[in-house]
Amino acid sequence: MLCLFIVYSEAGQVCGVWPLPQRMVQSSEIYSLIPQLFTFGYTKDSAVQSGCSVLDAAFKRYFSIIFPDFTYKKGFSNSWFEPEPFTVSVGVKSGGCDGYPDEGSDESYSLSVSAFQAVIRAESVWGALRGLESFSQLVYQDDYDAYYVNKTEIEDFPRFPFRGLLLDTSRHYLPLNAIIKTLDAMAYNKLNVFHWHIVDDPSFPYQSFTYPDLSDKGAFHPVTHIYTQKDVKKVIAHARLRGIRVVPEFDSPGHTKSWGKGQPDVLTPCYQGDVPSGSFGPVNPILDSTFKFMTNLFEEVNSVFPDSHVHIGGDEVNFHCWDSNPNVRAFMKKKGFHKDYTRLESYYMENIMNITATLNKTAIVWQDVFDYHEKIPKNTILEIWKGVPAAYRAEMSKMTKAGHRVLLSAPWYINHISYGQDWRQAYTVQPRNFSGTDEQKQLVIGGEVCMWGEYVDATNLHPRLWPRSSAAAERLWSDEEQTTSVDQAFPRLQDFRCKLIRRGIKAEPLFVGHCKYEYNGL
Image (cartoon, rainbow, N blue to C red; front, side, top):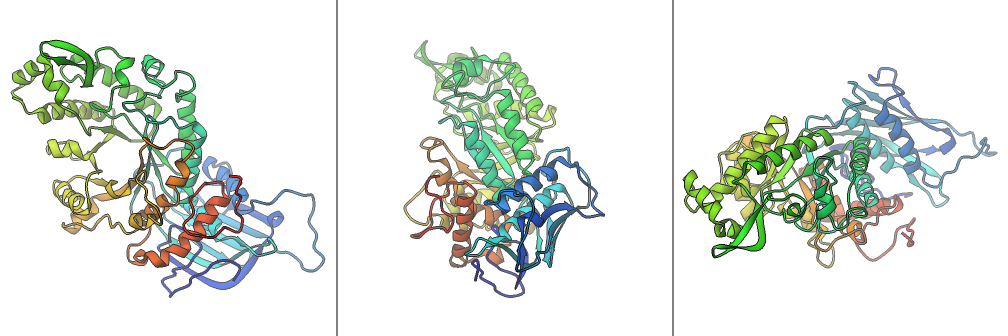
């Protein structure tokens, strides 16, 4: 065969598209593609036509992806056959090319490849993007570098609406091009949420226009290791054209040591006996100025990041500093919290959630917030990051019973690696495999891969991310029953990894061997 096919039954399991579509049927009938005679366009009944920023940009991008070796030459001639033109037509049912993808975006599409044409039909431009990605993966080359595509029918939609990837840009600064390249790879994997853990204890690289000292004094370097407003806009714009949401995280009250360098009094002074020790702990929750600062900061975040969601953290708060501070202890006594510092954290997080609610932002929090305080707003999304399967399944059961939407990240901490094919562990995760009713299981809206940055920077980011994250991407997109076998997934993932390599993504090898179009100078 000219490319790797594993064809099963009418159910349509075929090598060629990752993540596996919900239904895909492919035959051995093949069509030749001539770059000079290949065009993209819109169906006559499409609600959007030429001038749609999202799709017009996608047409240019995917031409280069489909024909990576092609360079334009004037004219076209061939003495031994008469070439046929091939058109990919896109039909979108409802308009909307100027907005941003969001939690309600419809990513379903159908794709029909037949003689001389392919037709993609979708409810929205975001679904059309997913269809274009699938078509691009169907195209292959023979040993003479001629391009072909097989007759194919696809009906597809994501299993989960939230399919995320977290990058930590505080522990190691990631240059803008590394983030942009990650967004490209996310689109190839049909991941749709970039969770930007933009600040943390080590550094504050986000350049705030309201509080510029936060990055001037809190970043590793105030010029070379920051994300300017222009940088942030570039990331959001790049993500939008690929149907990817950008959800920022400003984690507090813990993980905030870098904040205190540029914002006096925002952190709690720690005490040794009756005198300050000179060190500082979590955000100070007893001062009105703290919440004024947080209100101003989140108003800025709301103006910069268009997504309806914001991650406000709430994890791993060390209570020792709070307990050492006499002013905090006095505040606790006045509030009737006694010595229960989880109640103080809950008090703080309630105030932050009230701020984000006023801004019409849906808050995402780490599971610690729920563990310490179950009576949080029902629309708050809870993210599970702790524990082995038995532990996080019990947590999911408890959270969904309380009526909360849930994200799962615990089994997808991709910064933890081991020798060999450790993608298999990521692939076998079943997000809804916990004790609960059908209604509870529907509250699991997806999950995300997390790449924490303690030992990751631009030098090793993408080999660690890919193709490990691809395994999670298929789990979050594809039908559970069609993707149970790791052994059947392996040859498809191996093929897809080679496609990532050819597209410039430094995906780690899965086994001994090589890719046909491997470029070892990457």
